[in-house]
Amino acid sequence: MNKYIGRLIIFSLMASLASCVNFKPGWGAFNEKNNSENVAELLAEAYEIESTAGTAERLQLLIDAFKKVEQADPNNYEALWNIGNYNILMGAAYANKVKDKKTYYREAIKYCEKAMSVNEDFSNELNNVDEVPNAFDKLSVNEVDAMGNWYTAGFIILKSV
Image (cartoon, rainbow, N blue to C red; front, side):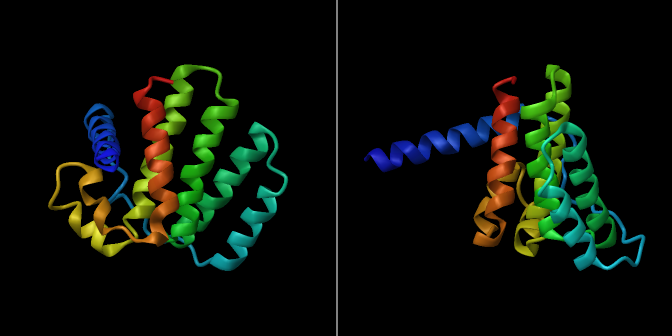
């Protein structure tokens, strides 16, 4: 019985999150590949920056580095969910104004939606449902990072930071 109550609570939170958070969704907004840079090299550069990203400036450089990966490979799950992840960190650790925090969290949600949309089953299901959580059952373990960050950023916004 308790397991069903827990599931009901989680579903209710996700449904309220989806209905209360209103902004342009991230799926379907992939960039077109506009350069021929080596994705592996760009990822290596991003991870090198990651090891020294201890300030707002370095964290923004890290986000920008992953965006370069996205420009080279718009469907790169690793880059997309990391952009979402580090936008959450930027909002939580370095943004001082509520408006700025929300901007970072919305960016996180957008990029996490893009990351989840790399899963073709999830992306196709979005055309058949009215809210993102209603397509979560199409995700695999490979998209768990993006889904977790999507939920985290949305929950923070819902709680009005």
